[in-house]
Length: 547
Image (cartoon, rainbow, N blue to C red; front, side, top):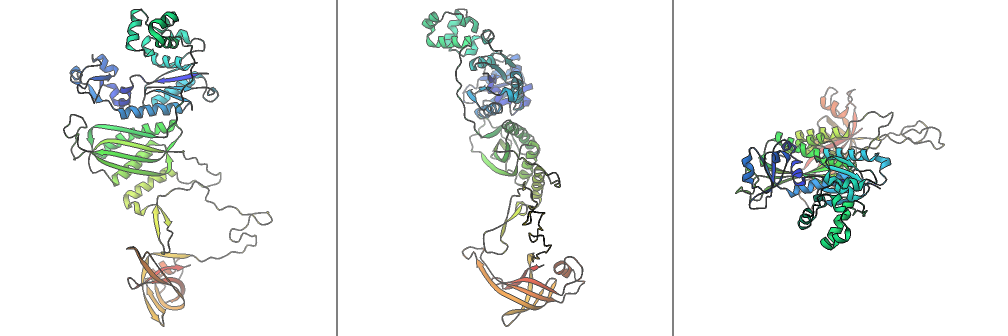
């Protein structure tokens, strides 16, 4: 049995640097935002080389030159820890949430799937780099040995079975996280490594340091095997970025959104998931003036304006570039009303789209590219004019609404029906091999309905005049009276007729060619039309034509 430990050193600093990787090349310090003195609680190597130490005040640190200063963000620490857990779940379903900066993985049974322990360590290191984290990884036969090795040694460390005590013996005592009193006592004894602590007699150690000293010695010997406390996986993906200066231009906003989407999609990819929807939340400045979001700002106490939008995707996506284009197109059509101070993106996790084309099926558009094209059309003509029509459950004629277009991944070809004898396919028209065809009338709807003038004789239409239609009524069926929605402003009422009209429109008429005979091969002398009377407007209309 083997265990892997992933440790992120300088975790508070790494959590803030993760959404701003450009700061890694500069001297950077982290200050506690709640403290009145605003002392330094974290710094990177460049700041340490410049002479800055922990405990300095913010003003003292800024005297060392060009120093980037950020406040501690517990939100970013929570997100960084969630990314660390996602990395662990990408490898093993058995994970211990040891600390905010450390997790332990059970690697039992994963060798056949992922390869050797060295390959697993390399895979974890690459995954941490994709998530924007600098991690130390160690693999050992016990969870405590792996934990100590990850906190003591940089890079990746694989401890062979049976050599745990020798390797852990080189680890300094500070890696055991002892109390300040016990650490001071051991240093006075000259004990500074795990090997020196493991060599002490246990009875005398217990008399002087109690059970805590015995526990620390067991850790130093790297021989104790304990069960790990399993964590429950959470399906929640969020990335947040707090801005020093407000952003109101689309180009810098697109750059920041792209950075967050890259991190979001990387976390989804580690869990073999995709985004089924994206929720965007902006905190806006009170006015269209760049206002730094700092505690020393006198206007920072004002309640920010919240801008929220949810983008439901037709198909799950994990491509950050296409997601960015979709977000920008939607935000351009409904832009925030003020500069942005804080950005939060949340992904609704979904299973990735899996499709397999048939061998003889024609190629269809990529659903993700089609979604991007629909977003561009929506920006031009409006969301109410783009999508899939959906009939409403009502008696109102032609009542429908537009819903989001969702491509159908199933094969759209009609199923091949067999003849009753099972020999050969049947004809799609009749279901038999007789070769007979069943003709069914089609109704061509005119949108909008064509205004018409109707002459009534003895309560029945006798003559109809409309665009492309002019003639006497040969046969009539009706009226069919309908009404509905009388309790609302959208009340409707109509009397419908099916009329066979002997048309007198000349063959060279454009309207006749458009409505009476779309094929353009002469004008038919007769046609069957649906005509209705609207009592509210007291007008006649032609709803459509039967083909």
